[in-house]
Each structure stands twice: as C-alpha cells, then as structure tokens.
Length: 151
Image (cartoon, rainbow, N blue to C red; front, side):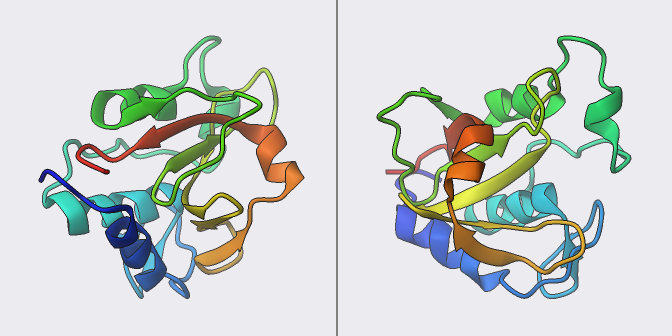
C-alpha cells in the first residue's frame, strides 16, 4: 500500500493501548509483545505479514551468536532504514524504533514513535502503553525504520 500517512500508523498503534503483554502474541486486546504490536500494526496497514517470526525465548537476544542481530535483519528486509543514531535524529510519528539494552547485545525491543518525544510499546509485566521517549530510551536507541510507503 502506497501513501500511508504517519497519523494512520500512530492511530493504529494507539488502538493497541491497554492490550496485555503476552510473549510471542499479536492479537489486539488479547495480548502481544513488542514485536507482536509491530506485526499487528503491519497487518492493519499492509495486510498479510511478509514473514512469520520463528518461536523465540524471552532471553533470545542474550543467546544470539556474536554479530547476529535478528530483529535488525528482519527490519531491514521489510522496513525502510532511517539513519540513526545521529545527534540530530528526531523520531517522526510512525517511525519504528529498535533498542539494545547492552552494547554487546543485539536489538531486543521495538516501539512505534508517536512524535519526537513519545512512543508506544509493549513490555513484560505491563500492557501496551504510550510513554515518553526519555533520555534513558534515547541512550538505548540503536536503529530506526519507517513502514514502506509511509510519508
């Protein structure tokens, strides 16, 4: 689908707010993890997902082979990269943000920016929520992407 407006991406992500955290799930209102949120927004915008992720443990990133970064690799296959981190990078609404929590580990978390200073994400022990993109999150931001066709 061409010409997806950022407002549509953010509006769809906001429809997921309150969905409980469920590892590997991707059903709005029932359960999702961070990747499941992204997958659900993709389905709303583009229809069928381009690939099905393999089963993954909650600790998958900690056991990844050196140099392997499966979340980033998948994002590169299906999303449009945005140069980051750059000191002047300001997330646009609808940008997909990837985070790594340790310098030597691959990206393990993703979120959808709702603007320059906020994002929507799902995290263990909570529901999907919109939160501030605080300095802590910005320090861990390692990649950004856009949905294909996003303005």
